[in-house]
Length: 234
Image (cartoon, rainbow, N blue to C red; front, side, top):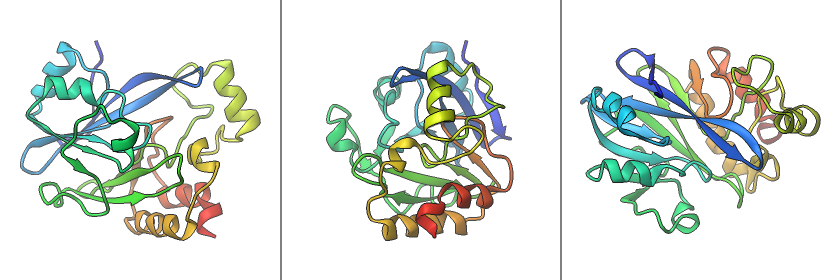
């Protein structure tokens, strides 16, 4: 049974889930955030079964389902079927990429008033290939990203297949070297616009990062981000 891990006591829980992409076995990471009014927000949903539903229901009532990035939407409809009363928010662009997903709102630079006390957010318009909305959990100063940072290297807690190692070590030079996803590195679009989003994230002065691919970042957050985004920030 997939087991939720309490990451921030009584506030954030995470769950890793397997993802196969471009022939590589990767892992995504769902976050469940309990808002100050005890409502639950699901960030980047994983596949859900009854066992996982029981764990989630023990935490509170699911009110919001978020698809925060261009490549992070696979299991939104699974959650919608289980929690039809929840509202769905999607990253800009997904309304065209996934017209089969029904949604209530499109995420932007301003947090919904119902979670504004707990979360801040900013939309990063990377390029025509990939966009995402970054979040800050304000009570714990936890940054939540999907593809703006990936951290895979020697401390990777899963078996890294040969194809993943080939790309990360020899081609992308991302092994032990956290960077944005390869899709971002193909081109950043309007760098001035992206730089504004990056600067807002840096101004948050987060203390840790929940990211979707690779190991969590538990310190020196702005230093890690600045190195990862140097080509845009300089």
